Image 1 (cartoon, rainbow, N blue to C red):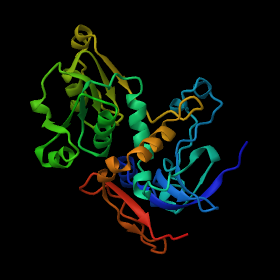
Image 2 (cartoon, rainbow, N blue to C red):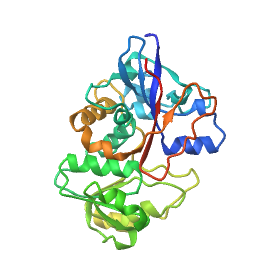
Image 3 (tube, helix red, strand yellow):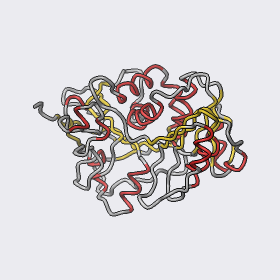
Amino acid sequence: MTTPQSLRVVAVGVCGSDTTRRRAGYAVASLGHEIVGHTLDGTRAAVRPLNPCRTCPMCRRGWTEQCPADRSIGRHDDGTGGFSGTVSAYPDQIYAVPGHVSTPVATLADPLACILHALHGLPVSAANVLVIGDGPMAALSATVARSTGARHVTVSVKSRDRASRLAAFGNSVVTARDLPANHYDVVVESAGGVSSEPILVAARAVAPLGHVVALGVYAQQTTADIPVRALLEKESMLRGSKAYRAGPDRDDFASALSLLAAAPGDFEPIISSTPRWSLDDPRPPAIERGSGLKTVYVTDRRD
């Protein structure tokens, strides 16, 4: 078995799960899984937080995202998250960042890998795509859909006050009440939450023979009265998407980093805030997502 390596963290992106766990009482040092760090030899690297066991039935089938024994960085209240300042990762979790990709952009590899996993196998090219949500996952989903050759990309937001930040990426932006029914070939539901409304909007909006992928994370207690007859009549498909694949035959994290390297300028605008984070300051970072799209904390580290 290989030996884990220590990396000095230089940047951490804030995910919605970080803010949720912080409010639940997790220590700040336990949080942070969208990580870029320096290895001991000085290599700048993106760190894949997923650490599947590789031996369970799911892993042996290549379905690493379903590993029940996965020990992801930044998911447990054990003080070893990205915001601890130092993380330990196995060699297969460490990916060198190309020199022309900025450190903040490189932190997007983890959420972008989730998008690539969600869209894997879907007929996005030349499709009429709808993305439901107004956060960074929606922005990433729309950006990937366009880069994959979608004919048209529409983003559905909760309210018009958030429309401008997503329209700036070249998307058509509407509110849910303005969406036509039975219209979109591929629907990416990236909102999640407590209410079941987003997934119901998706089921209504998907076209005949279309595809709905549930990417947004819902509360455990959330249930939905899915219009099963409508999906049957439309022959539409609805499936979930959890994390991403990290196997020898398909590595979504590596693919995400390659996509960032191919067009870093497409992803720079998604990062709306890069507050400094001093490792010498005893006060922990606020771990808030802010009012923009994506917050990435950047350390004052120069090593």
